[in-house]
Image (cartoon, rainbow, N blue to C red; front, side, top):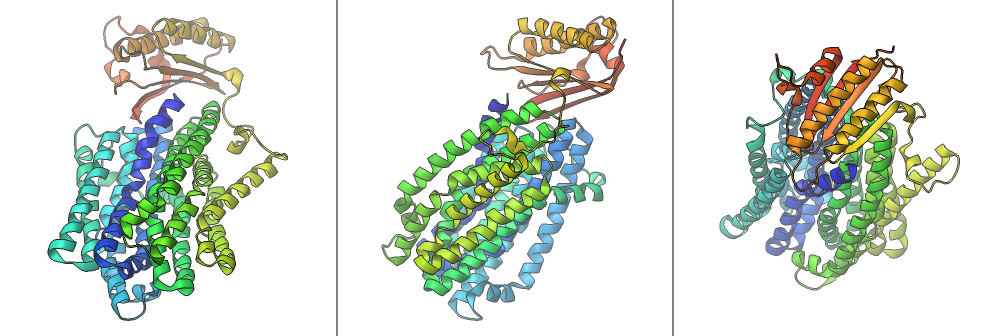
Length: 581
């Protein structure tokens, strides 16, 4: 099931990673085509401020993934709604405050970015900043809503929102350039309007009755806001490091080769960030699934996750790297049509950037995994090493000998060095070199349930339901439960799992149900997870009849029963008091 979840989530997560970079990519193309190389340099100088919007939005999105994966893992729907309401409220407050602050301080910010105090470069940088910052609520909102769409299984709507944003941005850019002649302000405003277009499309689901998340002002709590902020800190570290890195590299490049080098770096970042969506997507999958599995104390699931994800990382990193390397002249030509120094520098930069995609994908897996398993400090350290310290150091050192070419090594060198640091840390923690994936989890020995206290059955057909029920009954008896309790539990499994197979499974035979029976201290936990259409069996238990007798018997003994539907999966968790005979 984990393999299926990874495949199901990866495309949507990678596509959602384009929500920020896609508009910036389109703007860069339009600016190059209609306004020239100096305008691209102005765009590049404005980039650090623009990335702050992405940093805050990514922080909130990561906080949502951490906090809501925890509540989803425990089946707490009310807590998930508190996370949803608090995230929306916090996003609106921060984005509006940030927008107003930048508008008031746009002139000194433009000077600080290195555009000078006056002249065309100063004016173009300030104008783009002004137009783009008006879309801060839409940009942050798009990022924050992505994990909720993912958890609700609305991948198609997510794709529609991204496509709608892309079409809107192209249309508004063309209108600005060809009709209104809005210059850099118009280009920035076009991005703002396209983000709001994506928000409007996404709200089709969130304002509908079928939305699984319920917004309420009463659900906004300081406790949940703090949890979202704390959960998103590692992502903020990573994005803040990126802001610092862009600022530093702009300074180095301006000193080395002037505004043409800064323009080349701006184009390189646009192409590189678009290509890097695979690593961002795989990091999002790692964060969401590791958070859910960790709070379910599913050690075997975490091991399976970390066994599979690096394979996808190498595959996707290689594929995207080959595409960027081979088609670098074509991609760069879309931005800079005329051959010359700027075009040559950018092609070289894109090809060197492509070499770092595989280690970047692997780093994002580990960074997100450690965040999902509550090793926040380790995630923060990796974020700083990968995002700023090591790539900036590599760019500075290599530029002393290789000039601009040395700067282009920042990404590949930084990612590779970071991966070596992670491997070295795991080596130190394990006391020996590590080749297998499981030791990278860094789980405590006490984590999870002992193998002898856990029963898992993967059910694909009706005849396997009876086998699973009998195995669960014997499992209960072996752990000292009374025959009556063991029989009741077997009846519950037979009816719940049987109804799922009969009424939920499609005829193509691709559905399956994962049954997990866990004995922990003085409590028993039954978890049913299937990939059928959304259905809450607890709400439909017939009353006053002999139907579903096994279910009602177990529910009468249950301490807690929780149902959630997330990531296109039904999740039913039943907790029972231990009744040893």
